[in-house]
Length: 426
Image (cartoon, rainbow, N blue to C red; front, top):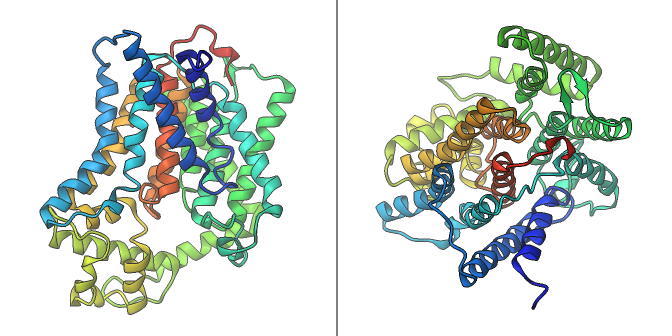
């Protein structure tokens, strides 16, 4: 047992968190298992410190506020179930992932551990591994989706979003200081190669989820590199983002087709009658349905399926056909805020906003105080996830909720990390 001291445990914890992205898209249950291990090790460290008489000073204010945000999804379920007087444990499955992350966050901050030290290499490596592994993975379930690239246990929307996300994060992690590139040629090629692979994989998935964030993140990247006035940086960044977006549109038939379909779906949508079944049109109808159900039970919510009793209400059937109504019942509302509003009422909306807004404010304050690449990645990550959350669930699925909790925890801890030689980090 002498080798299992707290320092060794801290190194193990840091390693587990560092490699979390690598198997996300290619190994089933990868992130779930790693989170359990990470939480267990974090608790062991806290117990070990307690037994050794190590006492911590009063907790940092931000640590307390972020911990509350992590607790809010569980609290939302509990309050709404209390209003309905029905308690089901399976509702706590995804929210519990944030609860498990609290001791991990506490240990990382109190021990001044930087779990994202090699993020600039781990993220592009994840994209390389995903590309190489795809031909060898089972061709079943989601992998059988016609003309849409993904792995068998990840739906195309999630797969495409993560690949785009990892590509943009890779760009953000390229080290540029005072207009000078601080990467070796080999490192730069490795990162740019990973970013290109990520964009290609996202396009091949046929998913539009999160693509609206592409120009926004490029603008953030440009403005973080340039030292012009904010106005000039934003204008220049906007031009770069426009050129990049037009280039992708011009060279990819998939992007052209999917964009044109979205425009046609929106233009053809009927607000006062039943519309033709289209991808975007059904999403609009489902969101409208969810908003209606929320007004009926703003405090208690409906749980997962109780709104079935009102699924044929005239207020709903006047614009949503039977297939669309059944889709909302069996597949959710394809919108994180609406899904939680229907499930847990106002408490569900509050918890989602806490998860997004509180860390976002923290990252903005960190980046305003001093240049902080982890805060920049944190801001970008939350923007991509929030935009994606408008067309799909990002916190209600176990896998996505788990990765969200782990990755956000790592970025928060790394942005708080006090280090003297940040240029040596990935």
